[in-house]
Length: 186
Image: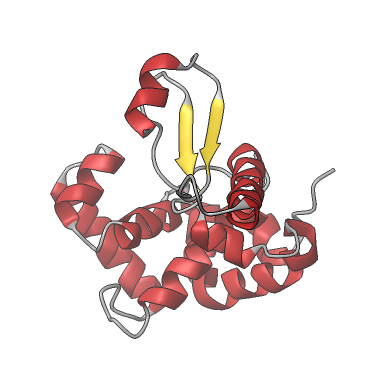
């Protein structure tokens, strides 16, 4: 379905798809998927994408692709902003401080790596960097956080915090603004 939308929709268009519903499932299932698609579209329009851009075509996303963002923002982004900002600071604070002074992209690297099963090959390809550069970034991330990125006990927390960092960071906000909690949209 995603490929069909990318082939036929105009560039610059944002398309959000809810979960699949059978033709005979009834109105409650249909209304549920429409609500989910609407929430997904709102997030796709306001939260920077987790993945690097996919060509020049339309942005096509699904409720599955933004499931974590939907759960983190249940009740709205603003209603959860303080909680998410604390999560980001508690888990990723050292990375954000590093990024604020060094202009690196470690939080994004971490999120892409976690979202793709900690596969160095897929992560490096998506970030358009060499595997050796990825390994250097991952070493930096681990040394700053004092954890192993691939530790199964930490994967959920690290991914949730990296995702939350995108949610609470309005376009153009700095890492220092996230750490200080000054990320409210104007």
